[in-house]
Length: 246
Image (cartoon, rainbow, N blue to C red; front, side, top):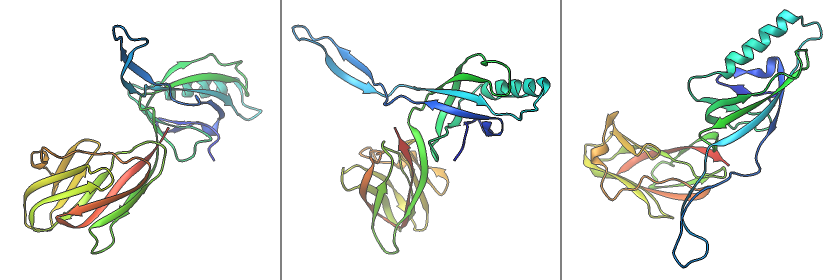
């Protein structure tokens, strides 16, 4: 298990340990409107805001580290924490989970410039739901249905990869919700069809096929749990998704 953070591709474990303080749950941002004559307000919508992650970093250097070596480490830490774009953040105690689009928004002073000094860092995860394991589920040969068990604690957006049969369309549907995506065009058979629900796009043999997605289509997400998916107009099909964790 990692003993410190990884941020922007840099592993802090070589010179530090870390202690993380995570909120017990996500606070919800609420949009509401006053209703004349009614107590309280009418709830309009809710959303999960960016998440603040607080980390205390403890230096863990050799006892004979001199002042020059300590200065180099401190300057290197400072350079790793400054980024012009959002980075991936991995935390100790949460193996296999990654926060994306993260920036370091605050860094406290070192608590003494010595080999076991410490400082407090604040990170803002603009994508507040952690990403877990990537999953790929391949349909059994000859089947038109696929059972998919989604782990994690938050909904995730799937990607479907299908080999079209000769005909006029390819459809993937979540039997439990009735949501489906249909790519309607003349297929000769053997074309690779990709439906990416996260981006709301489709491709056929690498070429954009957004115009072929029917108006009744709904690029759907998968909630944690078991899903029964059905496929029409294709032979081989695969479902890919990444588990999400609140």
